[in-house]
Length: 116
Image (tube, rainbow, N blue to C red; front, top):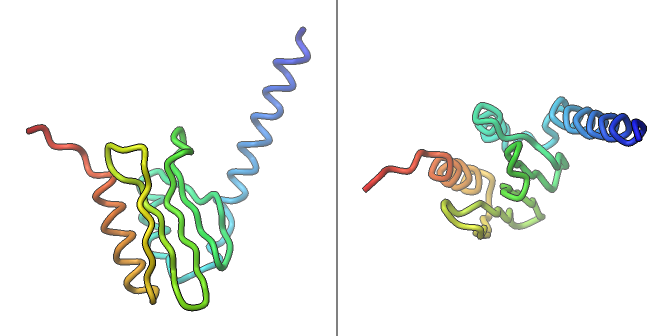
């Protein structure tokens, strides 16, 4: 009986270490380095770190993601919608527009709700 809790703790520790390794890696796509820093400052972390794909999520809410997929001629971004279970996806032709959009939507999403 004692074997299972020990094994569960080990597996949990291994998952945490793997997440930490991903977070400690240098951002591979420098085009989103400012957004990367903003995410970390607000408690979001990188779960996919590739030249053509970045994905961020918040600890404790791994189903809410900000996804950036970089193609040859477009950048597709998926952002969470505030107070919704849905995500919104759109595309841009350059890093500047994509980065500006993601930052704006991120701040909209993390901003506290105002009571009417």
